[in-house]
Image 1 (tube, rainbow, N blue to C red):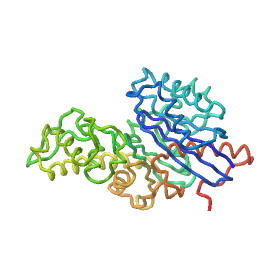
Image 2: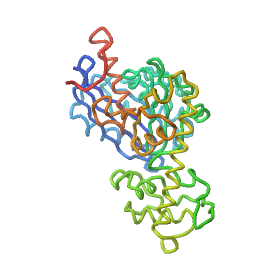
Image 3: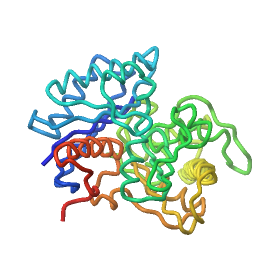
Image 4: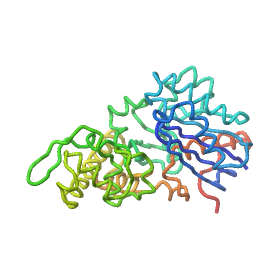
Length: 365
């Protein structure tokens, strides 16, 4: 039996997965997430957040290992990514003093903390590789779409290997493998620049009046509980309050616009998000040597897997769409990078114990 924890430390959300495995099978998998906007609450409180996640997932302090991936180093609470990487490593080491800690790099390798400190850009924003790694162990040829609260990552898998062209966020933004659109935190004015309304086309305000979370709350794609981030105006997360926020995007309010008109605005923004992701998916697909769209499987994961990733895949012409949670037989799609890096760590520990590679990673029968 191997017991490990995987951490995915983001700038807004910190997620963790506790996994117990035995000879390539998952005996137990638990995930947890905490909303921790590091630029607001302060980097000094990060280690406390990680400690709370550890206690939430496991009462035992004895672990075979901890796998770490991160994206929080991009936060403007840090002046450079190097500073961010080193601070995150410090915080994790403080919490897991007695556990073996390895860090995921952009080539889907687990490296030592010392190596990560020497080459910080090698481990910055590498969480997409964790999801790609676990999917590549289960499907030899596919494309992964991970739509979270803030971004969408698109990872091609060819011949059982991650075939991503970009390694850094910049490279991925250049080639379509990273789309800065998500289901909670995206500023509506970053998604669209105009809205059809009352027979005309209204330019939108660039103020932070409404977020994508308001769009999906209005349309019923998420619940109030799933809307885990702060709202743009600091008010509540009822549908009525979301309608009020969205009306402001065209410098109006709920007394000037009808509910139907505001809902139509939400539908327009939603459609724009689907188009953005579908366009990027086609861009990535065009570079692969995979078969026709009717043959290629698309794996969807993240909070927006059903209403954004799945619909974007359909819009792009793909028909074989698989939920990540169904692949591993656990409801873990909202935290697939932390699950992936945990399984990578478990894989490393089992290789040491068993003297060979475990067969696969699925729920024990």
